Image 1: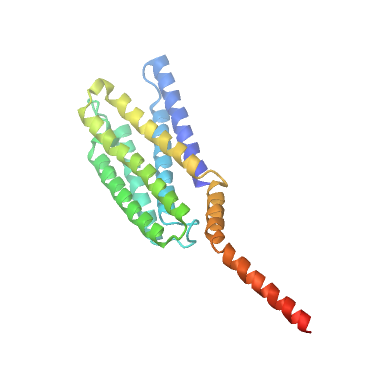
Image 2: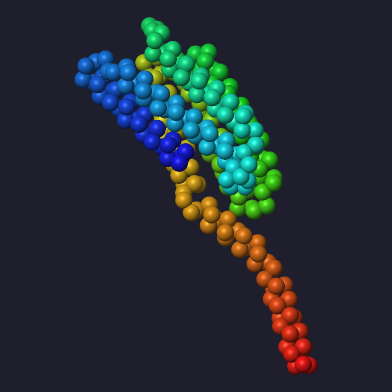
Length: 237
């Protein structure tokens, strides 16, 4: 459900952004309210993806049904959402004659980058602890792939910050938006592949069968011995 919500929010954001630029093409100004809603939808999608990553890192509903440090999880999530919303509001209501992209070149944007790096480090710590407690090799590999995928997505944000500061002003917005949209599309496709319904349970079931197959010979020998013992006792009676 959370993943579908993230996909829908991202799709709404892209559609609203396309509508804004279509209006910009027609009247030369666009619709700032539509653009603001597009950026807000994108922030909601990013926040949902943050939450999904943190829940997976904790092993919730995969390795354990108990969500530890839930207060920290939701506090970090609230901080990211709040800062993103403040950046968007700053861009909407504080007019600037320069081409600065507030979300990635302002002080709140820098704080967002620091929070994201904290999330990445904390996610790595949680995945390491969850993987250490996990016995199935297939789930250990699953957690490692999730971390690599999220690491690539998190590191795209510092790349966007660098681009916002070094690229020429007349192409800055286009390049930064392209990086952000590409990164979001990449993480959505990656999670769609890894979290496809029935894929993970089938992997776990296969791993459990493989783990149990090593004891089949012993079980068969024990079964044969029990059967011989029953036959011997029956013939004596």
